[in-house]
Image 1 (cartoon, helix red, strand yellow):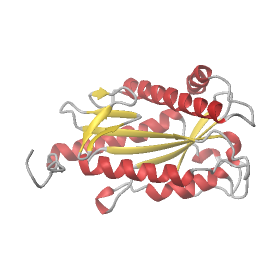
Image 2: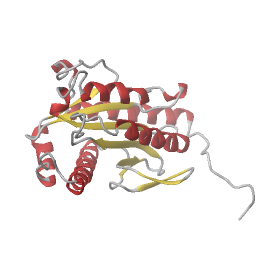
Image 3: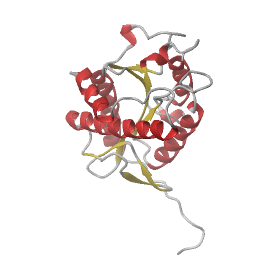
Image 4: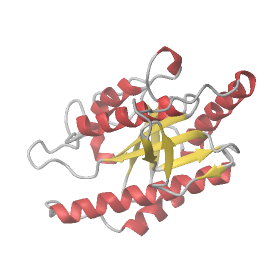
Length: 239
C-alpha cells in the first residue's frame, strides 16, 4: 500500500526529464514533485488525526518576523503550530561532479532559517526535515550523495531543543521510479556507499508514527506547563 501510495505521487508528477535536461525542465519537475509530496504528506497526517487543523501546503503561519509559508503545517485548537514538515528534494545530478550534492549547503541554510523563525515563535512545535533523494544517490560516489546528505543534515538534528537549536526529526527519503520509498533517520550512521541495511530503513507508516509520538509528547508537556510567552518583534517608536 505504501509503495502504491507514493507511486501515485510520481504518476502525477510525470517522468523525470532525461539527462541532460534544460534548466526549465528540471526546475518544473522539482517544483511539481515538491508540491505533490507536500499534498501526499498532508493526506497522511490527516489520516493519522494529528493536531486539530492540517494546513494546505504553502499556507502561512504568523511568526515573530511576520509570516512563514510551510510545506506541511499542523495547528492545535488554539491555532498554535504543533508540527512543521519541511520538504527538500534533490532530483538531478550535477553535470560536472555527476552526483546529487549540488546545493546541499544552500538547502541546509534554508532549513536553519526556517528553524530559527519557527522556534522563536512556537517553542514546542515539532519540526521535521525530509530530504528526498533518488535511489541511485546511494551509489553515485564514494562516499555517496546519500551518505553526504546524512552527514550534512544530521547537523540540524536536535531531539531536545531546550539545549540548543534544531529539528526533532531529520529523515533522508530514498525513492525510485517504481514508487518504492523508505526513510533513514539522520541520527544513525550511514554506509559509505550503498543502501542502509534493511533494519535501518523506516516505512512511511513507521516514520509518521515517530513524528506522531513526538507531537503527542510535546502536547503533554504543554498541557502540564502551559504555553511559553510569545516572542514578538517590536519597533522602538509606536506606529
